[in-house]
Amino acid sequence: MGEDHAGLSTPTGREEVLRALPRADGSAPRALVLGATGYLGGRLVPRLLAAGYRVRVLVRHPGRLPAFSWGDDVEVVAGSADDEAAVAEAVPDVDVLFYLIHSMGQGKGFEESDLAAARTVAAAAASASVGRIVYLGGLHPDGVELSPHLRSRVEVGEQFLRSGVPTLVLQAGVVIGSGSASFEMIRHLTEVLPYMPAPRWVRNHIQPIAVRDVMHYLLGAARVAPDVNRTVDIGGPDVLRYGQMMNGYAVEAGLPQRPIAPLPVLTPGLASHWVNVVTPVPRSIARPLIASLVHDCVMNDHDVDRLIPPPADGLTGYREAVRLALGRVEADAVETSWQDAAVSGVPSDPLPSDPEWAGRTVYTDVRTARTTASPERLWAVISAIGGESGWYSSPVLWAIRGWMDRLVGGVGLARGRRSRGRVAVGDAIDFWRVEKVDPGRLLRLRAEMRVPGLAWLDLACDPAEPGAGGGAVYRQRAVFFPRGLAGRLYWLAVLPFHGFIFRGMANRMTAAAEAAPTTQDAQTSEAPQTPEASQTTPTAQPEAAAPAP
Image 1 (cartoon, rainbow, N blue to C red):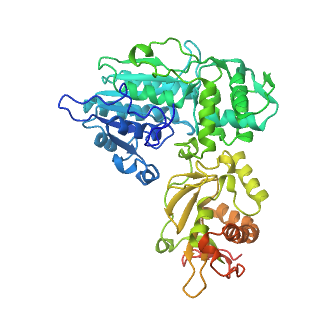
Image 2: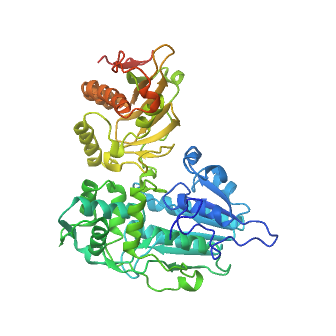
Image 3: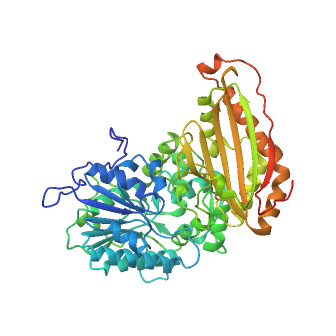
């Protein structure tokens, strides 16, 4: 149940019963993965590679792939599932297509968007004679009214089953693993609340499944007989009430058991607001998760065992899955996380280059500070910003800004980050997204909080100029492109706070770098840090004058 030499946790894909079956000519089969940068896709791809598949991915933002260890080992097609041209480019010569995308967290009209994308992929797969489609749907009872998200997943599965391409739909319930939204919701509810007022559905029965067992079934699905075209349920060995899952987590985390009081008035909508307040999972993601718990969600049968035998060591029990997830979190070794999922309704375009600012109003706040710490030590502080490290100044104001964002449906400051020390393009850091990393020199963050405009934050590190006695120079730049009058008023409203928030960041980050000097630092001058001239500058380009501070 441990890791192999390549660092992959079980299953690795190298197990004999999961390895790729060669084509008739002896060549390796090709797998196409849609959703490769998501929570499950990001774990499946390296295991497919280890199993002997050639892997192709269809991704909306190829720039995120360098963040993954396998990014250089796959074929890449840029586009999305609703892009007919991109899908047509991706499907030729594919033996198995994994469809691991759905619109959890998306806005109105997601059902139509989900179904349209599925139709596009199904038609292209049939036209290209794809060997098999594997789709991960949601476990649900029969004969009841399903939530919109569960209903959508059922409709997508049915679309693939009617496509003419042999399809295996795996229906899973609550997935437990480090970084999964379901695990983080249970974790924070249990850790934050000594007493839990909860909806009546906490008494419903649920069959959770460990993420490693989901990987086992996905890999095994690629090997089933070509005539199989059906839906099967998958789940772990335990059937529990949601309250039992919370207290099972408490036992593994060394916490007291939590009294739980079911309340008849907490609808899924109200409960999602409650989860939004006490956990880092935003309301847009919490609501579909909660709606899937309104009914009992257990396996109707075990037909999957005839198609994909269980793991040799057996399926992972709930408490063991929690124990493994906590170990990964403690070791800062979370493979993928819900935090890194794209956020609906926020900008994804990169920061324009300076020449492109001509004719646009742009506000900047620039800070520079010298430090006796080495550039390496300063970069270590920069690259660990956010999450448990915080933002180094005015924590109350940062917290208030995060709460304000949560109240209007944003991700808020509590989203944290997947790794405490590693940072890569595409990573989420609280309510920012990493847009650019130049290791040792620059970290660029794009705002995903709700603001009337576009915002970025650059944190940079340069060696001190020759003759300065060593050390480094810290450079910090906030950039804001306002949208209309609301954007301009927003900047003016927060401008008074920037003086001590951004100045405090510069001073405390350089101080933090000096607090734990490296060997090289110890040989440098012990002169105190001297912040250079810093300024808050609303800058207007020629065609759009910006108001003075």
